[in-house]
Image (cartoon, rainbow over all chains, first blue to last red; front, side):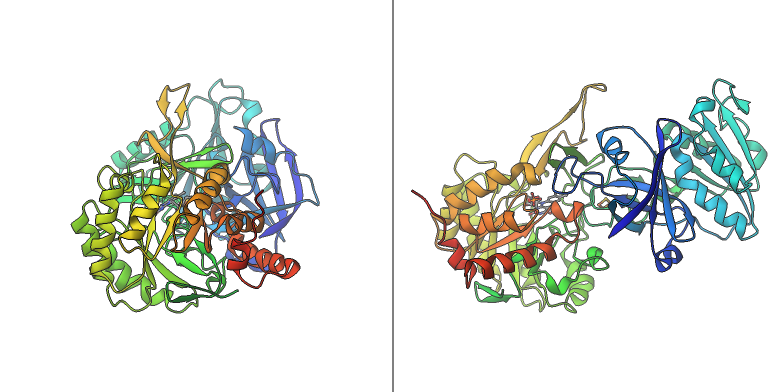
Amino acid sequence: MAFKVLENRSLNGRDYLLKVKVDKELILKVKPGQFGMVQVRPSLQFDPLLRRPLGIFDLEGDSVSFLYRVYGRGTELLTRLTPKEEVEILMPLGSSIPEKGSRYLFIAGGIGIGGVFLGAKLFKEKGKEVLILYGERNRESLSALSFIEKYSIDSVIYTEDGSFGKKGLITQDLSLYKDWTWIACGPTPMLKAVKEIAEELSVECYLSLDRRMACGVGACLGCTVETVYGYKRCCVEGPIFKADEVIL
Amino acid sequence: MKVELFGVEFENPVWTASGTFGFGLEYSPYVDLNKVGAVCVKGLSLKPREGNPPPRIWETPCGMLNAIGLQNPGVEFFIEKIVPQLKRYRCKVVANIYGSSVEEYVLVAKELKGVEGVDAIELNISCPNVKKGGLAFGVDPKESAKLTEKVKGATDKPVIVKLSPNVTDIVEMAKSVESAGADAVSAINTLLGMAIDVKKRKPKIKNKFGGLSGPAIKPVAVRMVYQVSRAVKIPVIGIGGISNWEDAVEFFLAGARAVQVGTANFFNPKAVEEIVEGVKRYMEENGFASIEEINGALIED
Ligand SMILES: Cc1cc2nc3c(=O)[nH]c(=O)nc-3n(C[C@H](O)[C@H](O)[C@H](O)COP(=O)(O)O)c2cc1C
Ligand code: FES
């Protein structure tokens, strides 16, 4: 489906917000944790070939937004999209964050905030207790801070160099949140650490995983995640997995 | 745009290639399966297969490498759980099959015998991503002829043999399976490739090698379809990088009686529908009444 671009702006030179116009019906379908497959190649060109999976970051009225970091040619090309242009996106895709808990700790490492923010926002609106732990290298990298503030979501910020919030790693105080449900998204070493701590403390924990994808709909079997039940598709059985079921 | 091949009537000559469209059902929310000529399903084996360890895919210039390793739920599951769902649609169903030995291919073909809703078998003798079978048959004309004959003897369904481009002489392969009784050949499967991460100094794909597909391989595929279709009498089904209607017409001009769309489904789920519409328009505008007429229309000095 083609969507009209409403906004595609740099937040800090490296992270961007892409906002597209959608109809109400689609908004109702989106569940927190899901993603879209976004075309980055200019139409009529075949390079880079594949769409990129991007977590659905926010919903507002009749728009869906994605927060993305420029890593390579695909995401670099995406930054060139301008308002009024159209962009092909397949969404919403994948599994979502289970809603049965009442206290949710969202653990976001870097751009991983893109995968958990919507959960925090929607669960707060539903009256659940919500806290975001958001960790980055330094103050400049905290591209999603203004969104957390805008919706007044409780948060604890960690920076590795101490330039903002607490100095240190996002995983350092996790034992304070034993009776919360944890949802984590971020780089693999962080997810490994979160999984390990969650298992030690017997906390219910979910991870949002990121894999290279070709189709995004379960057809190509390219996005394999290793689990205790064998190989699973990140795009259908994931991206949200139970932490104690995945092998990282 | 109905076409008839080996006694089966297809709604149109634009199909989806095995492994790129799942069992069709995965795409049914986005694609009208009634508008797809046929769905060639993911390669089926006798028993379920786990496939290769990840990472399994890597994007390359205008293409991609994959080493899925024929992950599939097995032919029995396919017959019991998938075929009944596919029967709701007008698209024909081609069962792409794989075995690690001649016996295993034959057993899979036997399972499919008489199964209503399966219109043809496509013998995958060209998968580069499995250790046993697959490509082992696809590079030896004698072995592939023997396999074709055995499978033909075990089934009541038309048999398409899917050829590998990873051979010195694809024409020899095509002729040899034709004489062994193949009802059609499809070409091409993926080209064996490799990509290396220079920072990690490791192959990008866990399996080391992967199959290259997508627009990057189209010229190789067109050449092979051209050569094969001039050497055999059975229908040739063109595959390789087809992404829009112009690509499909290119294959028809080269001699293909039908085409399969693979990797393009990933980056454009509407590819098949758009190609069907585009080919229809091209035929109207150029006064072609059938695909066979396009087959004969290439101008060569
Ligand atoms: C992810 C992937 C999985 C594939 N799996 C199979 C398979 O199971 N059996 C088979 O015969 N071909 C398989 N193929 C090969 C395709 O059917 C097709 O021959 C090839 O990709 C070239 O066409 P394309 O360039 O349009 O993708 C696979 C290709 C891809 C990209
Ligand atoms: S990306 Fe194709 S199966 Fe997940």
